[in-house]
Length: 292
Length: 273
Image (cartoon, rainbow over all chains, first blue to last red; front, side, top):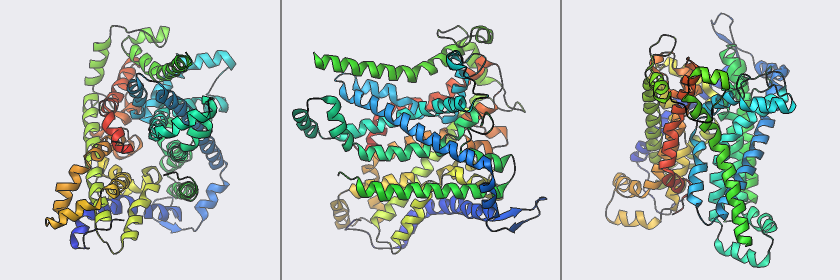
């Protein structure tokens, strides 16, 4: 913290009030409501809610569809992180490597970041439609691709749609990470190690660790939450619920099924997952990987 | 020679990367300039057709929706209001909150810090129905206010501003105090001008974030008057080329902003000089 500060006075609350006010009304109030929903059961006629303890949680653990969504979310975030991370890193290393046109490449690779996931999903839709989808027909000719029926093929569809835009974010952050590495370190390593491939994995990549771990968290958060718009505009869970993320399933249960208790319990489960990931980040990443 | 070879390889990889990014968007754009019968017969197109003006004008001015109350033009207007509102509201409140956290000796500083920053762990998707019922209770459904404020309830920018303030030398405040500056004057005259790069970067970030919202506008606007572009994708009817044209137009504003302002955006987020 700062050594020099203003004395505590009423004016500090004027600075804090707008954000705190918005957070309390539009964030804390709904979160409290989420907990209330999770531990109560709505009356069938909407006359009230009664406290049911952990029933809503037990109910979702009994629901095979919940584990299908859980499994998909884990696979989806893992594959998206792996694909977008490695392609983003590959492109960033090459862009950092070239003498000319670095900023032009940056411009041409940065823009997909700005496209809304829902828009990406609608676009992907056109390439995977049975009627005139290029990729649909390409894959169909290769191995009989049909995402309406095959779970594996539906996975491929939503993974391509989800990964495409996220490559940009990985590229930007890896490039910034590469440019932050001091020239002298790279020059010294060039004398010691002539093989550029080995030099990258033994010198450069370890120095990129903080960026890598930051991006892992960013990519997981993206796959968990931001992909709602993609799922909702591509497979909508096809073939039969196998490509629903946890967020998508919770929304559908709450919206279509009007089961707010279950939606609330699922939300709290996801909060726990996010909390675990965050603690992991703080413990492991902040503690062990720190090069500054 | 090796140098030439390796850099040639780099250019090749980068070209492939750019191709993967541009090709799908180009094909949708090219297809959007044809007539529907061309698409239905031959599929997606690689080259431009000659129905550009016809298709795009029709999409912009066509009265869409179930009740035929809204045009794409109005949706763009709504999206612009929403994105600007989210950007301004979240950046101004975050700038101020971060200032209080860093520059005041507050009694419950740690508690306040956690109250604000733990909210980053609970994205809107996790509290979407309760947020909706709060909005309904406050009578804010179907309003610009309802579109903007829950999206602005975010501490991400606060985190960035706090990090940035911590790098500002202590001498700034010392000398300002010697000149008799009060907290408000120091904030407005010194800190805000100093944070300009960061403010611009956060405005861009939050604008794109607001513009790209899909689920929340879908839920909070039952009246077509408040539909936004991105949620409109799900609502728009029309022939296939008109949908292509709508998709193309929907991505133009955020892409333009990122490309034109990319220097400021990158400078702010990565704090490089």
